[in-house]
Image (cartoon, rainbow over all chains, first blue to last red; front, side):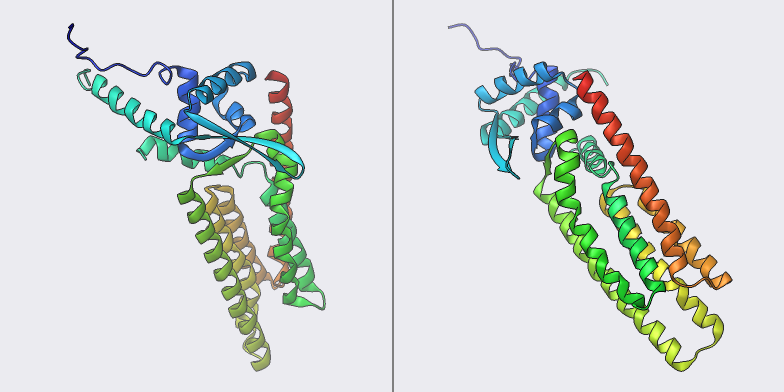
Length: 102
Length: 197
């Protein structure tokens, strides 16, 4: 049996600049809608839509649809699994960066 | 939260108040309080003030959210804001009662003219304290500038005997004008963003 990797592996789903920006934003607030994420991340509508679909499909973010003043509002928030994945990702990244020079 | 995350969250929260709606509504409350103070109802003019603030949420939903998006901040942030608002309100009502009492006592006793004039500056100082708290609560520094304007206005009204309404009305006009400029800028930016996105 070949030996396992000694250098930890990074979650490639999270390790993508556009998705990281969205996740960093969602980690700071409780929830936000598409327009808020669009304005604060600076991503294009199409790009954000693709990234949100991937994150939702992976169970990292959940979405909730509700009617506010008879208008539909879809908000995104980090799921429990998403929070765990972010904790793991942060731990992995810190251990990977540890040997880097200051 | 790490330091950079705290700073970014603070920036996000501060930018939440950048569209000027609160300035316009707060300015209207202040303007009518000042204008009413000159009339027969006097200090009781302040009772209309909370009505303007109540309008903030529905107007934000109608005007701001479709353009800036919706966000709900963390529970810790919301609790901090609610506690701050309650304290600001309690302090405002408490100080208002003190000022009202002071005005009544000074008038009743026919106090010395300088003291009577000093009382005329108190409402503006009271509102200035609330503006400082609002600035601390929202992180929007312009509220501190409003507070400074009110304190200067209070000093001017004491020196030149212009009456308690003067600093309220003058600063209210400035606050509304600032709010209108901010809202105009927000709407213009939102239109540009929509075309770009």
